[in-house]
Image (cartoon, rainbow, N blue to C red; front, side, top):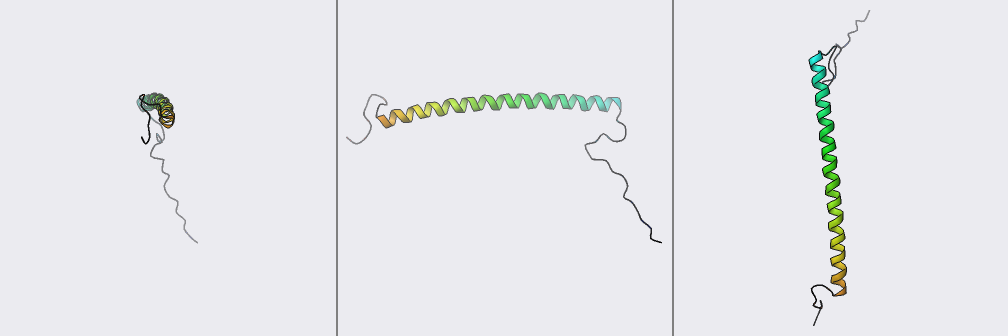
Length: 80
C-alpha cells in the first residue's frame, strides 16, 4: 500500500480567506473604490497630456512648414 499525502489548502494572498469580517469587507470595498477613483483620475490626466501633445505637434508642424517656405520672422531663410 502506498500512502499519499495532499498539500494543505492554501488561499491566494489577495483572497480574503474563509470568511472576512464585516470590517475587512468594508475596507476592501473602500480600497476598490479608491483604486477606481485613482484610475479614473490618471486616465483623465493621460487624456489631457495626449491632447496637449497633439496641439504641440500641430504647432511644430506649422512652424516646420513656415521654415520650409522661408516665412519665419519676416527674413528669408537660407544661403544669402
